[in-house]
Length: 293
View (cartoon, rainbow, N blue to C red):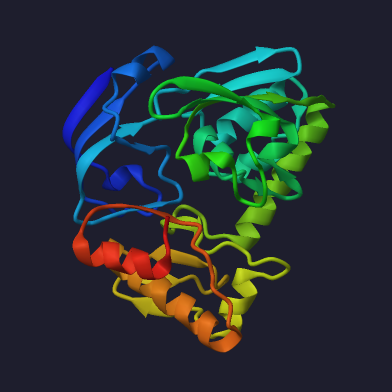
């Protein structure tokens, strides 16, 4: 298992924000999991995680090296570190449908299962069969009926389970039809979300039930609001971009301003979709106000 001390995480995050991690582990197989410190924090592809510019003094383990894909007929097993676009493209080559929505996701399988990710009318739970997860003591298998899937939620969030690999059952379709769907999904993403050329962490807040976080924020006039190097994207009010040199504190303060405006105008408490990794005292207080889990 690979390990590194004082690991500079900044360029490994989609926000391009973050300091040094005191110690990071990169397990390369499920056998390595048993050797991990029990209190280490798990990270995936860091596509929806804001890492503190002050760094993190604890121990972290990354699932990025758990990146094997295994196919068996219409079933596919993917390691937690497999990136969504790679998995979508791989199964498409075999004429397997059900994961086309992943083509535009910068995240990896572990995080997508953890949050029951979805887009364009598809979501993880549609094709999910089971997952191997680490409960802090041992590796257990959870079938779909044990996952408690709902909108952007799974039992892994409640129990702090770490997703190690997941199995899906897909549907056979014409590969050209699948690829057309993926092209449509990419075009939709380009129109509605900033490209990763503008460093961002995806949607900032979850959609409230029967409502749109982006619409609420837009009506509160937050588009192009800026604190330091962090700015609300001009084309969609539920995205924050790093204009260059943004710090984690900039992002947290901007999120708090966005959240407070919606609370004052509509009485609705927006729930952050972004996760946070850090232990700076002032930033932890901001996270408490934001109710970042």
